[in-house]
Amino acid sequence: MIETKIEIAEKKHRSTIGFWLYLMTDSLLFASLFAVYIVLKDGIASGPEAKDIIVMPLVLTETILLLASSLTCGLALLSFKFKKIRQAVVFLALTYALGVAFLTIELTEFSTLIADGHGWQHSAFLSAFFVLVATHGAHIAVGLLWLLVLIIVLARKGLTSKLERQFTLFGLFWHFLDLVWIFIFSIVYLGGLL
Amino acid sequence: MTNEQAYKKSLGKYAIGFIVSLILTFAAYFIVTESYLEGMVAMVVIGALAFVQMIVQLIFFLHLDEESRPRIKLFAFASMSLILLIIVVGSLWIMSHLNYNMMEMSPAEKTEYMMEQKGGGF
Image (cartoon, rainbow over all chains, first blue to last red):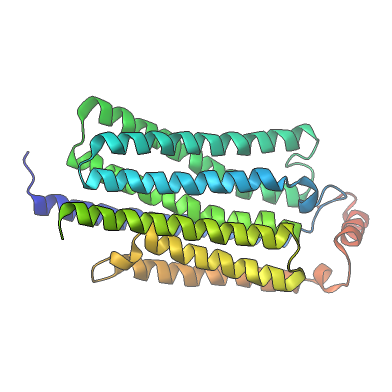
């Protein structure tokens, strides 16, 4: 089937709005978890407080990795828009690598906490902490899987208008996750140190 | 505007967004780690920095300013922000007025009190 340019633009416009509405409802999930975290953060049950378990240099590294990943993702989309496919692939690979690095640091943080006996079972604070941060981490993991699938399809079939549309949606998702992380960084980590 | 100029302009926009976000992140980080500000003031400043960074990323990364009319995305974002605010501020307001929070206790004392009441944590 041959699509006209107008049809392609119309489809892209519609799916972008649909996906945007999904992101807005997803932010409801995060807002609830933030509210839960702030309410429960004083319930430490004689265990560690936020400032006892936070390794700030690692968290700053995570923040910068995710921000850089968001940038390279945007640059990849820009390259697609101007038909610089090779350049786009490089940026996509960078986005993927930075995302994996972020997730690795986060999982190391979690496993260290659990190994030290500060798992989610210990207190209301740790439960809320793990649920909030890991929900974001799970989104990142899903995003990485999605990106991998898109890259494989790109390698096998080349850039179709459908694929370009899907990359645009992925870009929205990825930037959104960076937005959520700003608030995790500010409220959970920086707020925990105060 | 030629294709190349349009490309350079968009590229510049991403670069600005990235650099400003980086500066805001480092500002918030050093305010806390170097204890330039403390307590409530620090919390408000960090909240403000996070808010500004959100706006910066919405404009420079998510291109919310380039949306053509009718601005459905912007409207959806605004109405969702309102609901979000009601959920978060409302929860905190209610919970801070609950009985055990109305007693003047430190987190440690509160935990001890809860342990006595329920026989082990909450």
